[in-house]
Length: 53
Image 1 (cartoon, rainbow, N blue to C red):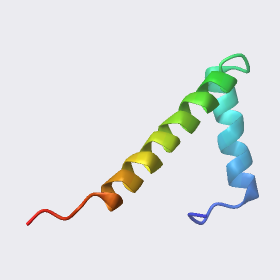
Image 2 (cartoon, rainbow, N blue to C red):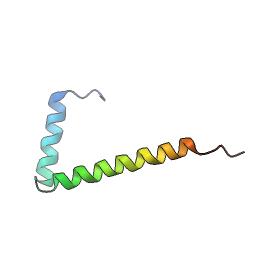
Image 3 (spheres, rainbow, N blue to C red):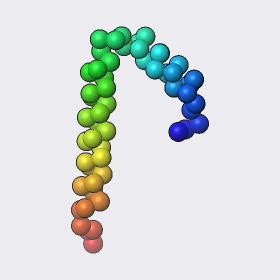
Image 4 (spheres, one colour):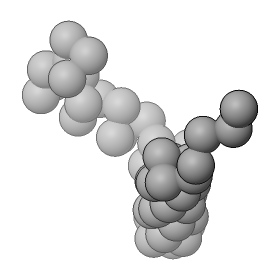
């Protein structure tokens, strides 16, 4: 996964926790999940779109 090991991922998560605080992490996770879901939906819609000539 991008050459990241477990120690690097833990360090990144600790930095995110320090920056945003524990009370904002659930909202951040929800927003990220919705963004990824919207991106996947847009990609799927683009693949099912008929080719223009």
